Image 1 (cartoon, rainbow, N blue to C red):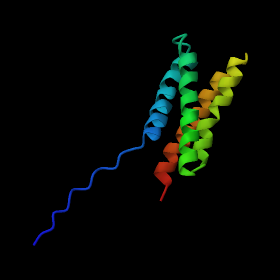
Image 2 (cartoon, rainbow, N blue to C red; image 1 turned 90 degrees about the vertical axis):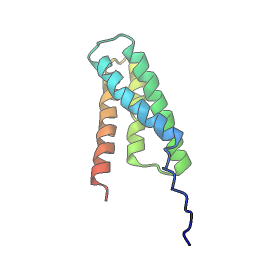
Image 3 (spheres, rainbow, N blue to C red; image 1 turned 30 degrees about the horizontal axis):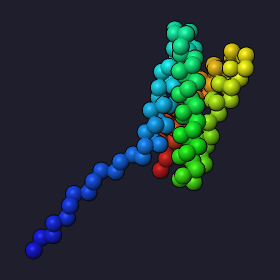
Image 4 (cartoon, rainbow, N blue to C red; image 1 turned 180 degrees about the vertical axis):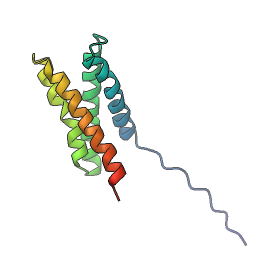
Length: 114
């Protein structure tokens, strides 16, 4: 007699993880446009995406109880955005640099995690 075991369904990523990672990657791309001054709209789009990344990092950290360094790094560019909007243009560049730092941390952690 054989058992009918249903095939296991693939695990789905939660919506907040999809939003966070998609917004983060788009920030890397749009931020490049911003830093290179390719498009004037890039500053506002980058800032909105960074805010979305910030909110989703807080949501992920709060709902999973995982206040890890990577999430804090994903939140810090908002400080640069704030500095940029109050008049310090270098704040946007700072935000973009901090975003890259968070991204490199995320990638390196996935490679070196045992």
